[in-house]
Image 1 (cartoon, helix red, strand yellow):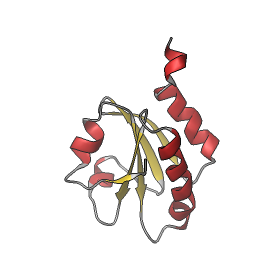
Image 2: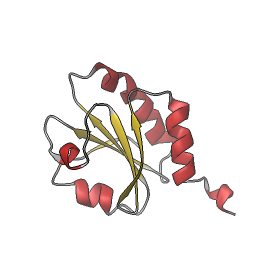
Image 3: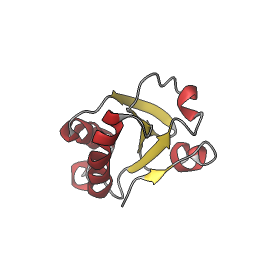
Image 4: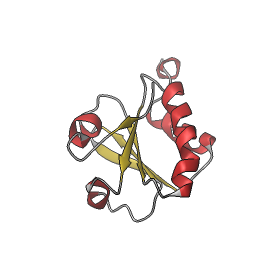
Length: 112
């Protein structure tokens, strides 16, 4: 599974109404740290397929970032049940992102 591009028009359906947690990458093409974290998020999307949706919002083309008070990019917001439950700012190691996502979307065997 690959990250999906989300726009202002699709944000509610893809993120707020998602039945599984969503990590949203607020990014821009000119942002070097955003380009650094992109391959990490592609790996996360594959590894967490079915448990977490990975979405990308281009801050130059969409106003959603302003609604959530995004001041620097990349900023990753984790949504669960339509609410922001966590935030990661900057290009961080994959393990940091994976640890947070494992908390909000534990593997099925952990649930038993």
